[in-house]
Amino acid sequence: MRLETEKQFANRKKRYGILTFRINEGRVFGVMRLRNGTSAAIQENRRKAVFLYRGIMDKPFKTIDEQIELIESRGMTTDENTPGILLREGYYSVINGYKAPFIDKTATATAGDDRYSPGSKFSDIYSLFRFDRALRLLLFGRFSIAEETLKTIASHCFSQAHTGEREPYLDPASYDAEKHQVTRLISDFETALGRNPRRQPKHKLYLQHYVSNHDEVPVWVIMKYMTLGQAFKFYCFQPESVRNDVAKTFSKLYASCHAKPIRISQRKLRLVYDHIKDFRNICAHDERLYCARVAPSSDTAIGDVVKELQLVLSKEEYVSFLADYLKMIPELARGIDPKIMAKALNDMKMGPIMESFVVNE
Image: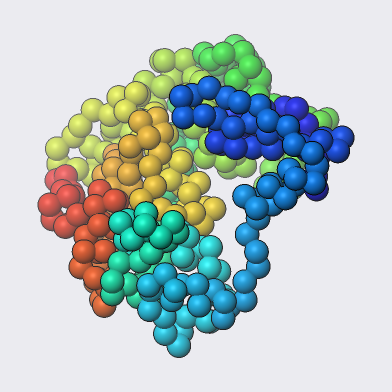
C-alpha cells in the first residue's frame, strides 16, 4: 500500500474529516471526527488497521452480470440493452452519477444501502445520463464562444492601455493584484513563450512562428494559448480602468444586437465569467452537469449561467442555443416518469422555457 506524507495525510483529514488512515513505517494512524466536532486519535497494529482500511475504502470488482444483479436487487428494472450500456459507459458513471432522482429515501434508510422507488427503470436513468451529456456538448460550444470573446476584448483593451510597450503582459506593473497572483500569471505567459526554464510549453505552431520570426509576441496571439481560467485571471488582475473598459465594450456589443441596451458592470462581468469558467470545466471533464452548483455562492445552477450567457453571446447565437435546447427536452421526456423529468429541470433551474427564459429585444 502506498505511503503518504504528513502533508498529504493532513490534507485528506481536512477534506474528508470522518475517518482517515495514514500508513507509515509499518504503523497505521487514523483520525475519527466525533459528533461533537472533536477528534480522537487512534492507533492500530498494521494487520488490524489494514483490514479496517480495506473494509471501509475498497470496492470489489463486479462483472457485468453481477452489476445487473445488484441493480435489480435494489429495485430497478433492467432490459436487454443494460449489459451493453454498462460495458460501454460504466456502472459508476451511469448509476452513481444519476441515481439520486430515483432513490427511495425511506427504503434506503431502512435497508442501509440504495433502494430505488417503485417503477424505476434502468432505461430512465440512462435517458437522464444521455440528456446530461447532450447538454454538456451543447453548452460547451457556447462557452467556447464566450471564452474567445473575453480573450479578444480583454486583449484589445489591455493593448490600448499599453500602446507602444513591448510585451507589457510580462510586466508586474501592468496588473493590480496580489504579488503572488501576478507572479503565477506571468509565469504562465513565460511558459507559453518557452522562457520558463522550470516548465516546458505545449507546442503550438502559431505561437512558435511568432517566437521565431518576430521581436515580440502580442498579447492577442499568446492569449489563444491560455486557458479560460488564465484569461479570467488576466481580466480580474487588470487595473479598474481596464476592467471598466472591457465591461463597456461588452455593453456596446450587447447594444449592437438588442433594441434595449443595458449596462454590464465590471463586477457583473466577473461573476458571469466566474460561472462560465466553472461550468465549462464541468463540461470539459465530462462531469455531471444538470444538478451541479458552482461558486462563489455555491448555489449557481446551470439555468443561472444560461441566462447570463445573454450578456456575452450575440442575440443570434443565444436564440440558436435556446432552439437547440428546446429540441432536447422532448427527447428526455419521452418514456421517462414526469416526476423525474420535473425534478431534473428543477435541479437545473430550467423549468418551462417560456416561463424561465425571456430573450431580450
